[in-house]
Image 1 (cartoon, rainbow, N blue to C red):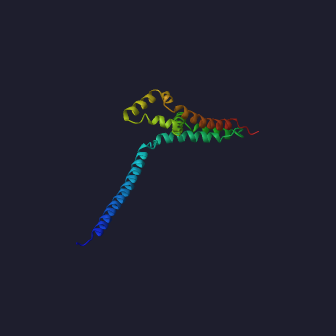
Image 2 (cartoon, helix red, strand yellow):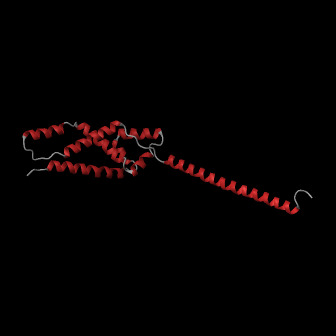
Amino acid sequence: MGLFSSRGASALAALAIAATLASCASNKAAEEAEATRVAAEVAAAAALAAQPKPIALNDSVIQSAAIYLGFTRDMATLRGGFESPEAILAAMQRGAAYQPDQISRGLVAYASILALQSPEFLTGVRQYGMDRETRNQTVARIVADPTYASTLPGADAAAGLIMGVLDADIAALRTAAEFDRE
């Protein structure tokens, strides 16, 4: 007889089959693990791609908004009941230091920054920025007629947010204007 008896040959064949099956099983487990890892990476990449790009404001918008905020905060610190003509003059000079057109531009810039805090408005506006042509048309419409912005999706939510913040600014200015040192 050869090296193995038929019983030995059967055992060797069984061992070879078991090793092959085990190899297939470990390969299958490795393939499944790799497929899971790849699927997770694809899902993460898709989630990242689906996230909107951050909004970048140019310096002009930020500076204009800062002028408005500086004006409202500064004027809200004034208190009536001035004790001398010099105190009245100093308060008037503080107010005159701000140019009306700068305050107006600043208010619009500040309101636009506030609008960007509204997720509904941001989502609505983003659909107009998907391609250059649509984005340019939308900007041209807003420039031609600023009230067009109020028709964009989510504009009501943004307007509510803006009015809430501006109401607080107005209340602070009103308090300063009505202050009396009795």
